[in-house]
Image 1 (spheres, one colour):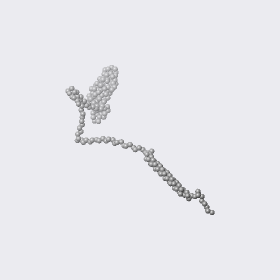
Image 2 (tube, helix red, strand yellow):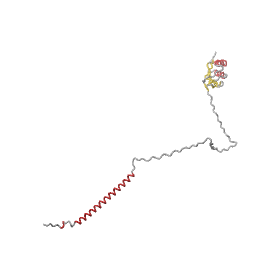
Image 3 (cartoon, helix red, strand yellow):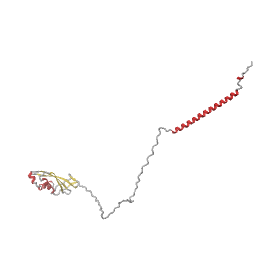
Image 4 (cartoon, helix red, strand yellow):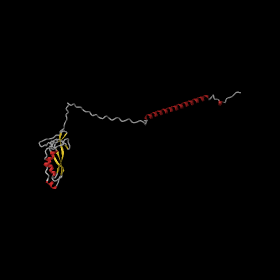
Length: 221
């Protein structure tokens, strides 16, 4: 029995059309894939460029500003050394002054301060009356005259007299430290002022001024 083919089911006649349709579809697919790949590549490249630019602009937070420059050095003073033989000319400015016969010139005299000599109260060798204490008591006994006022009032006691024995032995600055009145104080001063020169006191081998205190006793008999 011989098989008969259906003319509609015969694929040999459509073989050329199907091949052409497949080529067109394949070409379109390849073009779509190429365009998509190119677009993705361009986007990735742009992203890389932007990322690099942003990384350069970012400053790390730990960065500190540079220190300020050091201050300029202080100016040094230059001293000029002048030799001893070299003469230095110093200019002195004087105000213009007109001097005539009526002009008064004032001269200022320099007064030298004279240091006062020290007055001692105790020295190595105290001043002594000529002949010693015994002669001093004899002198007082012979020279003192008991004031009549003191005798009438019954005044008696000790008058303390102070005086300065100078370096030459002279008696100066006679004063009463403690008196008893009745004219006795004045009599004691009179007698001391008439004393002869004493032997001056000495300190470290030199004559010095000594302040001397002397008690004079007034007694009624």
